[in-house]
Length: 228
Image 1 (tube, helix red, strand yellow):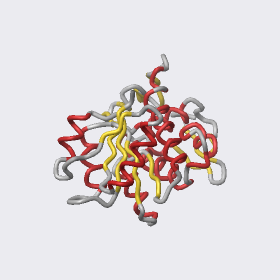
Image 2 (cartoon, rainbow, N blue to C red):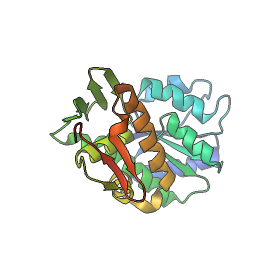
Image 3 (cartoon, rainbow, N blue to C red):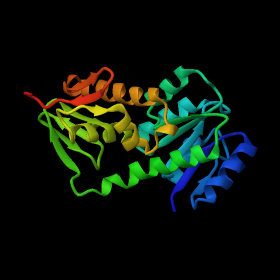
């Protein structure tokens, strides 16, 4: 049974989300003391974190940043704020997805299921180490390394890179990436994919690889192979 940590201070909403997710055989935990979020996170060791932005003491961005500094656990934001900057900020801090309140519970469940599929199922593939442009791509560890060093990617970033290098030198459409990553386009904003690709490219710049991921306007993205 997967464990979810729901960091939400609205008690009625917490109980409703817990009831819905428990009905899908997820084990849902809450926060007892919002001053001790990281302590409770370490004790629970969740497989996924669902977090609100507006919280007592510190906001969700603060806790997302701290969680991501210690763990690669997938993080899903819930928020009643409708500013695009909030979605962008959550992705920059390492979140995997974002849902705006009010939301339909079917959407929440679909997103949670998709997160678990791409986080805990695709890593069972036997071919977990690939090479690209002279770099070693360790899919299981979410690491990419070359002579310049090693960088750690989020689950989403690695999944996107994996999809692109498996079809290197070929254009992969945005629609194909969205379907592969989130399984159902209806539950994803187009901006979310853009944020993830831009964040991936920026990280790859540290290894002098960012320019090998090209945007093909109106078509999608392509991972070029060195020398091609």
